Image 1 (tube, rainbow, N blue to C red):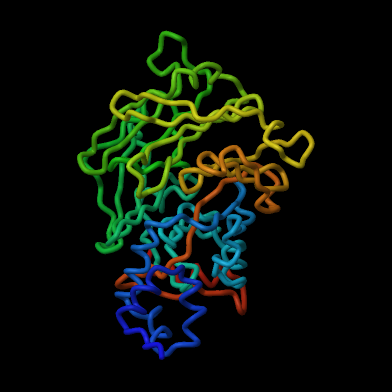
Image 2 (cartoon, helix red, strand yellow):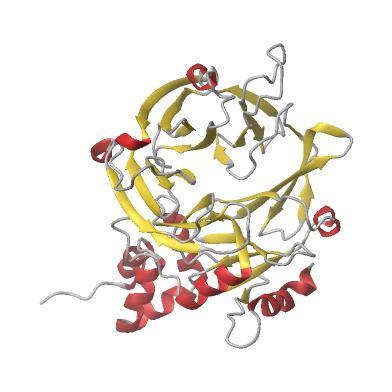
Length: 399
């Protein structure tokens, strides 16, 4: 006769499961039914999720505020857990700016003001974020913002221009546990080029951004070639990293599109940064093998037509590296995955169709029970009236 499992064993087992699985099993066990509401369990489940791969991704138009779609990666079709009501609300009401450990940072779709909040789509919880003064006064500005969760806290980082120094940006930090925006003493030096703030890479205690590659500098300029700029969150130091020598060649071509992403698993000792370049319908990827000396190694070079797509003359509308080893890219109608290591190396897989049409932006996502200590509300799902009106009324007192 088998012995029933102890509470501690059940706690440990279920804390390793995705949030959707925890909710699924709660109906069959009285003890498990209480887990999602327990702060300590939610914290442990979210902390362990930091060690696992993300299972889904949001895809949305790169510029316009029209549509948000959530899709699972292949093999993770049952792991989303976000209800259709929440997905409809997100698609109609917000633009997703960033995601980390099951939380999403959102901006309400309102043209005459900037309203920010953090949400956990699984628990349908919502936390308003105070709008910094410079954003409140400039509602049409491009927000350079990101979200990064650690084991015990979540951080929002925000960069904005110094009107007196075009080569530097101010930095503000918002920690959920503190609940206030704090100015960093040191500004980030951006150099002569524009940085792509929409794809930050957090690595080695610093946030990294790649510059654009447009040919508006002469060869004599120190900023003639594109580069990566890092900003250390501990000491405020800015550092410039050279991109791969091979990647510099042809970088001024109008078809050249370069991005940086995290490389390898979060638990791997080889965790690093990868550089992805799409130029003249060819993907090339390099991995930063020695951070201090900016030494890069090329791991892939493949023409789009040679990847095995079931489309004629596909046009790439966006790409990202997910989980450190999977190149995910979109054409005008479909999303594909292309393995970058192990058994999936150079194997193509069709993930889904999408309805964004124009250039798209990917945001990695995985469901967790992550919560915060105070100020929590509930997403105002649009049972009645306008979803934009309902969420604006919820968050208005905080801006």
